[in-house]
Image 1 (cartoon, rainbow, N blue to C red):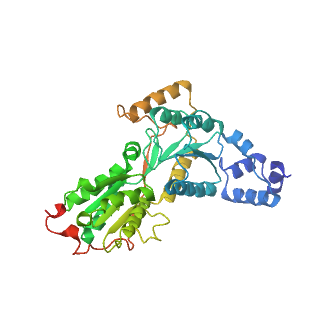
Image 2: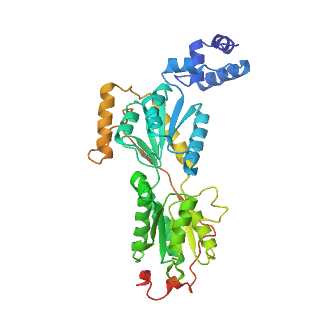
Image 3: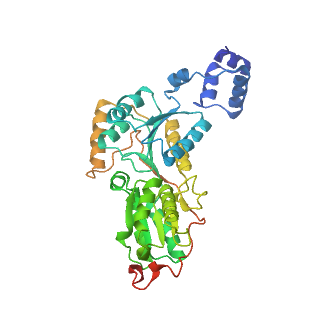
Length: 381
């Protein structure tokens, strides 16, 4: 099996230069790096990850922690992150927190340390102060995707703007009786995403001179069955149903379309429906949606973290650091203190990802003969 000495001899450079060229650590000219890579490839030489780790202090491994693996958003973020990592020569280690409390604690107490990751991406995690502190105590760069993480950088979309964009589209079509399907109480408490989208929804109505009808807000669990159940409630009374529904996720919006069909209503003739995500099923159902590009969010998280990793600005966690991080994170998540500093010593940053309105066939102007537009409708007063 060829070794680093063989590569160095054929490339006409030192073994130290081969190491720098193939690991990406240290200064090597592009010409030399290309020459070394060509020789290594011709010999079938592969850099030892263990040796590279010892030499550089980096593992070239990024940990991704998710609360579920059976939801489209999480898998899409992972796919985007994995693509970006492969391009940069990094590995990915996935941690799923859907198990019991014991399994969840072992991830934070043991697995992240044992696998020696260079950085961590936390995807839409609702963490308590102790768990945030344990992440920060790793002394590694951390980025949150799909929700803020106290003390860490974040890849975000503006969920209030998402709510406005979706609602403005319906208002521009002429809808006034618009219902909102957001998250259940549990979702609102943990992630606040449904609340923010509802705030944007209500603000858009108020700006257009229409009072939001709170009786037409429903909570669900961001699934197709959840959206179906909520829509069945909203559409039960033919004389008092909305002409449009804004659902805070595409899966719930698809549930609304299925409920409308079950009740003999046409979409968009009797009911317009808009969602958020641009789920793979959205095009099949002709669903108008606000695309939030989760794969791009995963890629952006990787780029953000690798800039920090490759600058080498990491400091190991210590017992004192861990205790301070836990205390600061606990206070921050409770709303009693400012955010703690980022664990790698850098100031946390927020990287916004743009969203786009994707108009399909599920939205159209309301039927003038619709009962909801009759005189005396709350939104017409």
